[in-house]
Image 1: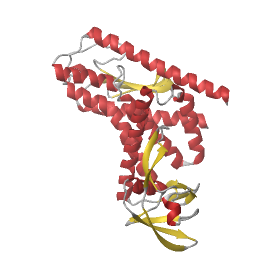
Image 2: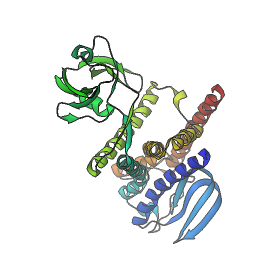
Image 3: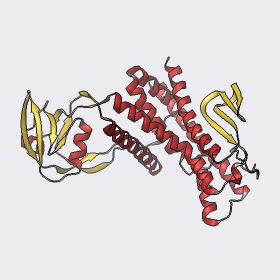
Image 4: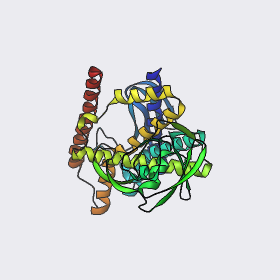
Length: 351
């Protein structure tokens, strides 16, 4: 069942990505020869309105083959009016960006559904009070539930953290303890901690840690839209930063996961319920959007880079340069896929 869920989720994510390319291409009048989910031998194919819609044997990706555009043969061009090559560079950029854009839109929609269905989050309940901390000096205790800070109602631990880390002023904490309400005044201090990449950073804090308690938070439509936007933005930022940290060597290459890791994460999430599955789908969708925007030839970002070069210099890159850079891009992608597969196998052996 887990494998089927993985294949379905991956197919949906790929379909949405390629649908973005397809929709933008058709909007600009470009003929699309093939719309394929998967690679290799076709196991299903149907011609509809000039496009061959296919499902192929290897379900790890997909592609839209437009007239005059072929990643496997970047020198193949067409000057016909309905060709990708006949478009202006900015129009090509729109088509290229539409795929990753569709992934971001899907993630936003999934987060919106999560918010409307009821989002699971850490409760703003204290699980630990650190020694000599502002919280301890103010009289906060384990199992206290923080329900308000100044005029801001607190529903989750994340909301609590956001309020604390942006204020170095004395704040009024309204807490619930044994069904009684207490008010405490606390001023956060700048302390040492670690971020998600295990780097040492300075952060405003009051010296508390969360209890392992979940709450279900329901949002209004307006709040759900804001929640979906924030989660999509934060996920995108996290992935961009993760790539940057990996290039800098802060995150080791052993952290790179492949298709086996993705499959396991999706399978585990599907067993935890629809909310968990939607959350993982949204995160992977953002991941696909970000990765495809990287300036690596053979990816959407690489093609966008070529078109930006054409806009700036008012001339197209030479065909030889396109061919060599595209081949180099495929080598990089193959290397990353190989690294992910290697790490997956090592994890399986060690477990």
